[in-house]
Image 1 (spheres, helix red, strand yellow):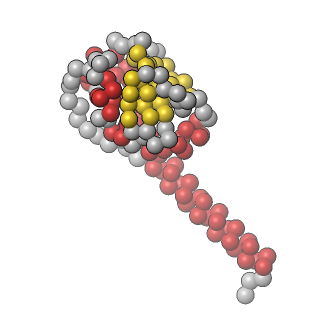
Image 2 (cartoon, rainbow, N blue to C red):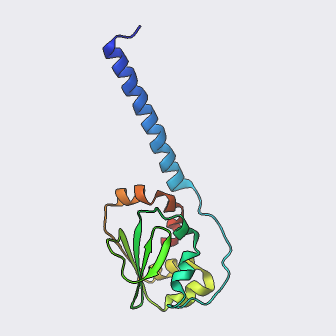
Image 3 (cartoon, rainbow, N blue to C red):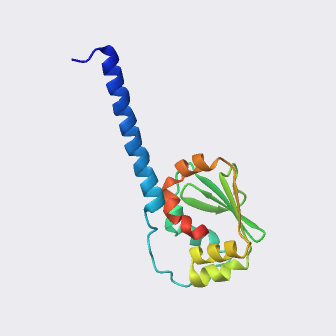
Length: 151
């Protein structure tokens, strides 16, 4: 039979093993899971229809309720808050993204992933993290499967 010291050590080891299993799951799910593949249907994307087009994206639908991302396209600002998109400046954004308006044509023809990748390759995509990378990874862990879109 275990004494109090042995029981405490057993509980501590069990807790450590469970914590490692949980951390391993999130690391595997975040870094090795592939993004869902979906065919892009070309469409015209403009500043006027941008909020509704963004709202249709799976990545927006999978946003955490407490998540806030500010998106600037050209001179226009958009707030992605939870699962909704609206015109205007995002207050207390966790992440701010800036994309030149000229990339809307590429996004419309090839999809968001292709447009963002090309903007990043050309040095035109700006991303500003307003929290630590680790805290954002935990908060936005459901979106890690889309990280390839940012190159």
